Amino acid sequence: MAGKAFNPFEMAQAQFDKVAEQIGLDEGTRELLRNPLRQFHFSIPVRMDDGTVKVFQGFRVQHNDARGPSKGGIRFHPQETVDTVKALATWMTWKCAVVDIPLGGGKGGVICDPHNLSMREQEQICRGWVRQMAKNVGPLNDVPAPDVMTNSQHMLWMLDEYEQISGYKAPGFITGKPVGMGGSLGRTEATGYGVIYTVREALKEKNIDPATTTASFQGFGNVAQYAIRLYNELGGTVVAVSSWDQGDQTSYTFRKTVGVNIDELLAVTDRFGGIDKAKAKELGYEVLEGGAWIEQDVDILIPAALENQVTGETSKKISDKVKIVAEGANGPTTPEADVELERRGIFVVPDFLANAGGVTCSYFEQVQCNMNYFWTREEVLTKLDEKMTTAFKAVSELSRKKKLYMRDAAYAISINRVAQACKDRGWC
Ligand code: GLU
Image (cartoon, rainbow, N blue to C red; front, side, top):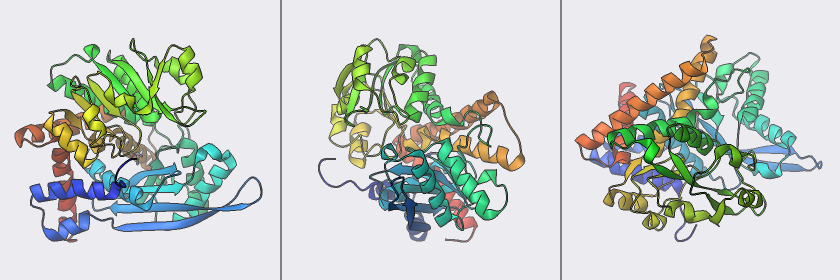
């Protein structure tokens, strides 16, 4: 990360301030919405496999719950900070509002690197997180989910701890659970598929046949893997993906101009999305430096890794061929890069719209758990597609009508919905 230190929460506030000004939001509501309602920072002591005790730092931020219980994932990441969690919680509020589900925004995290932790140690972190937060989370006030480097197994340990503490079964406490243990069919693929539903709609508006298009991805985790699958089903060709090498932990771009073969690449990928560089080479992939994904001569760029990747600097490297940037990750694009993308007329599907498929499906999972339903995969994905398509069309229409940049149009819709809920409750 070159240049001045990047603060994702300041970025989330800058994005909000711009649109709050555009829509003439009153001062009190602005003050309320540009900060989280609540934040928790706590210690999680864990007895490690070698017998020593290590203390991990955990977080939960509840940004706003005027529209319903806070909702959002828990990340395990060595560079986690409270400001990252605050930003991500804020984006969750806008995300739930843009797809119009009755939930607010929250996010959690633990500073740790699961690459260096045994399963037992990870289980202890999960259970410790719940022990610290049990009084302030729950099916009716704050519902966690998976995020970067957490998965359905982590969610099940957390659910089990919560149920042990509360003394009753509460499958609606957490989403992203394993199917068969209260999880929803379709949840694993929901975020990646949702990204491509919005790409499909964007291409439709531009009268472009997906089968004639190419894309480059940053990231090869859960979001990218399923997005690539669905994009391939629409006929699109992915020419490059960037991810970590399992060995040296450095990021590289893996390119195959005839098209990345998802199954072949998955066979040499670990559970965190790290690729075995040597084996990828054997499979005929060209291995370029990590940042090369953004310079590819493609129609669509999909940043689906972490925040702060499309910056003032890197956005200048985007090829003239690129028509769409669909943000699978949360916060991948900085405000400086937004200026560049807007100037060049690149159509951006902003993060909290593009990647809302995960939380939308989480909402379906909550509904099924709370009502003891079990929907088919087709039912879930059909409902998901409808929700995402409706949200995309509303944002795109507002953007056209008011000549707003897509991110600003999405913000305008979300801020208005959340502000209205706060006003209706008499908060501001
Ligand atoms: N972690 C995902 C996100 O950033 C999903 C959150 C959820 O399902 O609650 O949207």
